[in-house]
Length: 123
Image 1: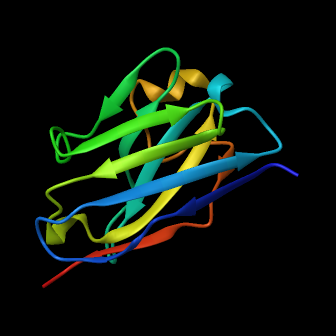
Image 2: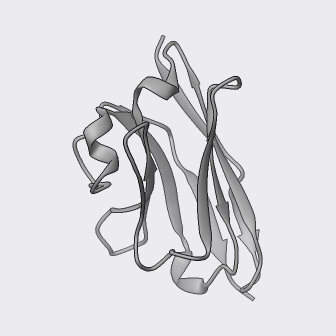
């Protein structure tokens, strides 16, 4: 069974850090683009950061604060989030799809989705 499982969300104060994990089973992540996407209440889903063997993408709003990485041995992709802001509050999803998706990191077009993990940045 093909599956993506996110973990690592939670409540953090502004300026704090979290690391999200996306573990895959049933397929090999390194052959796909992996995206971290988020959706805040009342807002459209947006691409935050994406990675593939072709490219790495960061949304302007997270550049310099978030880092995406991949551990092929663990079949897991991570999103290290530093200097978190209240505007980062959202449900974060990881998704897998064709490698060309990592260039623009779109909100749609992904083949596999995780269940999502809540990130809340608040004092």
